[in-house]
Image (tube, rainbow, N blue to C red; front, top):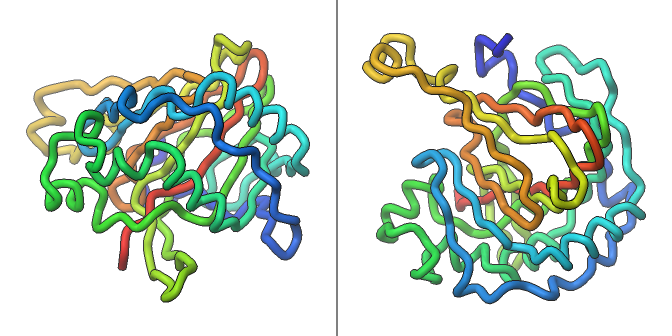
Length: 263
């Protein structure tokens, strides 16, 4: 059954969190090899809600990261969630690492695609249009990096992602808030991971008396796993109800951060 209220059913981002006080910052592998930026595109699955970038990571880089991430100290989320949280069963590693967030933002094609610098691959929007889409002027990625591993039988039930206020380090530091979730998939059916699709439910978020709700039935939007693909979806007050389906076979590996705008 879908949650009836965003207010009461938002998922927590604090479960099983490891802070920099608890965990040594990882020695992340370099982002090599990467596909040429001119070959990458932002694809709009649902206007103003869901976007993807295929091949942000090459297949070779995905394999290298899965091997590296397997060595990190993962924590299994509790099977029984706290009140108001969605059921999530997976293993995770979480750390505040501003340097890695900056690398992911600047050393890959993300920054130029999102800011419209790569005009061939970006959405055809003006500067004002981009700020409206992203919820403000984008300043980078959330330094809070989360690594998810879903093994056979693990899943993330229907939920909404919260928006959070953060501070990006620098001189001076930048007060920011998160507006879009970033998920970078490292495995797929081609690597042996079956299931684990991310599914969005637009119909559950339509105003009940709106014209759209009266005249059309909007089915689920299923985003299958594709190794190296980045999935961006709006969160906070405009977040769409979604879930991570159960993994049937293999392992689903994900790098998670968030898009940050200046506040």
